[in-house]
Amino acid sequence: MLDGRDGPLAGRYRIEEEVGWGGMATVYRAHDLKHDRTVALKVLRPEVAASVGTERFLREIRTVARLEHPRILSLYDSGEVDGLLFYAMPFVEGETLRERLERERQLPRDEALEIA
Image 1 (cartoon, one colour):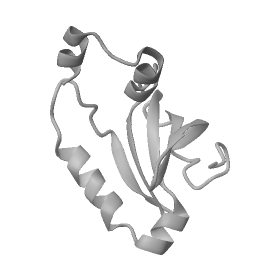
Image 2 (tube, rainbow, N blue to C red):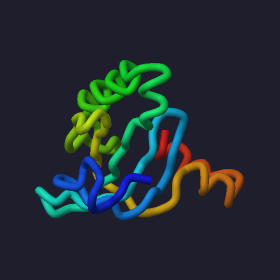
Image 3 (tube, helix red, strand yellow):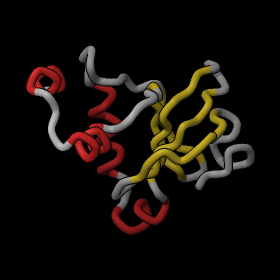
Image 4 (spheres, rainbow, N blue to C red):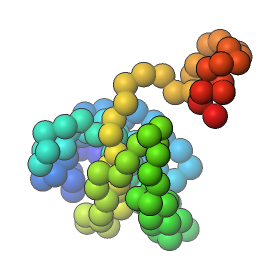
């Protein structure tokens, strides 16, 4: 986990907790010190950057930056600090779709159509 006070992003973001991870990156709930707001901060794991490079993550950032839809979160910020690539988006409280499906097994038809 990134250090919330002394890490490479400490001047811009205060890491509050790790909320998820995937094949390439770790997602943290963080406080955006510049804009005084809570964000989801996605950080490319250094071992992934070293082994497979950064191009896929950079492509993901470019894709997210171009998306405009009322149900898709917008990109707040992105960059590289001390070799760490990251991007920030609004943080949304609640369960993931995966967690909901594990709990309920199947969504009501109207809700499934609303998500799709």
